[in-house]
Length: 205
Image (tube, rainbow, N blue to C red; front, top):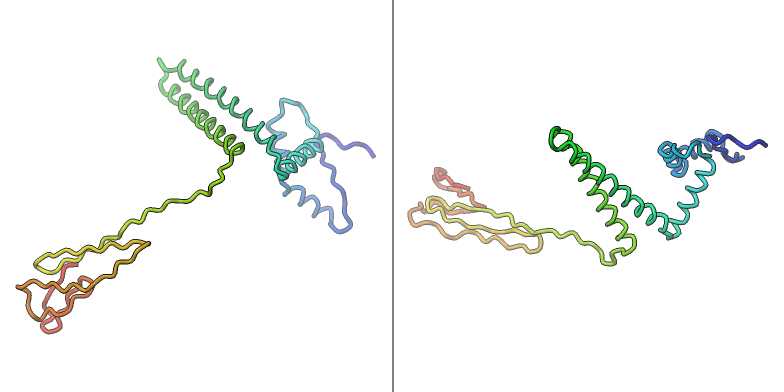
């Protein structure tokens, strides 16, 4: 049997699966799709053998799943230096355009700062791999009270009740009525005044 071409992936047949099914599984696999994408961006090395590339991808995936993160540390460390070089190159381009072409200088500087920010994030990722946080992270949530204001008629008496998630404060009926209010104002519930006799009273909530 002749060796397949460099850009051809050889797959083994199965009596339990059709060839169409096998091709679909390969197309949806992480190792095959990512290998092809990597090949697209590594054309400086010439034509790479896709079978060998997939073999390398599978080996590295297996090591990472087994807990060996050396390849990830090496990759991120190399990217730190690449991002730093990119930052310096863009910053220099910004400086060269600073005097006459402010628009270009601004664009280059923005790109330089993005590279610098990504470089910092990559360093943080490396530190997290080498020194993983042992303590769980809790999201702090502030309890902000919902103030309820009740205006008691003409006297404008204000009562505020703060409700939080951790503690419930019971709301007592407001028993204070101004002296100049009619005697028919007998019920006060949730800031609404019910005039049971004349039905002419108004309430401000």
